[in-house]
Image (cartoon, rainbow, N blue to C red; front, side, top):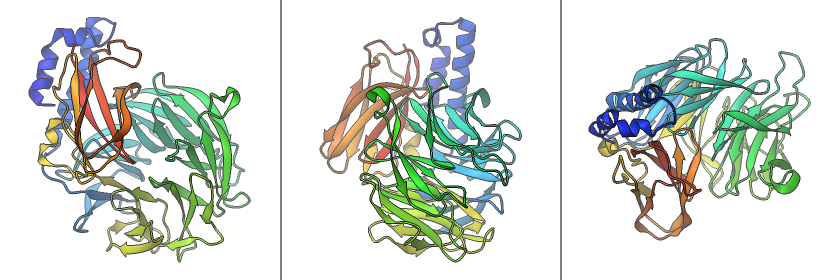
Length: 478
């Protein structure tokens, strides 16, 4: 979307009138905040070519480093974080860093490696995880406060705190739902309370279900078969690591989520990721000499490697990140706790480490991957990983009443195209079917799934090809 288009929207009274059924003053304030946020992003992002890049949090140094995934060139300490950085996430061509100690979110411009904005969260809440909901909201779990904060990116403010269970950690956004793991941590030396997963309706920001799971659930991941896998670390003494598998339609009356299986892994794994073909890997901190990687079949539950016969990787590691483009896992580790950090590449076909980086930072713990950003990214499209599929700009944008979404496939695959509103609600599914190689398009007529006209505002078109997903912003201006 061009700056001129956005400025024209600010001048269009009909666009403001249709945003909400409230007063013109309230409408103007809310819509202006959202549009100014988009203008802010456009003004702070430098649209220079950025290669596919892995970014790391260096907890000991409280810095960010990066590694070009094409050349493997490392640039250490490109920016400074706040105290106790705990999560790093690439979203919409920006890098977001969550600081637990200083309770804030920092935005890093990958074109300049500069921190361009800091969003202050609740002091002392110990924010743990963050996930994006729609185009301009973020859910943040607060480990000490036992809440999930709903953060409006356009204003940089917390608009609601949702009370959840004790020690909330991971968040998974799935269509119109958010899954939150509550570890049940009761305090040092005290037994863990019942672990749970709470499900939030993101359209109303309220809890609609609570599911009991084993001790200390720390990670929640979607498997290719549509089931949700919850990694439960255990209490490090009596209860060992296991995975609870949640089916979204197997509960009472066959219409609510329920745990249908428990997969025993042993040890104390702290992170989990699942490949596009259903191979699940859980990472365990290890014994100081090696980190332990457990592997199982996420579809049928067969365990290939558990605590009795783990795959060995670098020690002192707490994250595993699946990379579909290179069919590998990226795993950060430290030879000594708090010391020099490295990143290792683990081949999922060979089940072995095939490459280790040079030193990338001090205390390297968390990582994320930014897909390549090209100079034409200002058109609003996601141009990442063009060798797999290319998501082209929708036209027109802004639009009324219809717009066309275009994409180019390098090979035949299953394609789904979904439309979400700014709050993250699923508005309509335009396509979910096999498509051949080549360029394709699908039109959105501005109607929701019930056949009603969607309101003016910002929408997200999400295109998923196989296990890869890309998105673009669109503005409906009636």
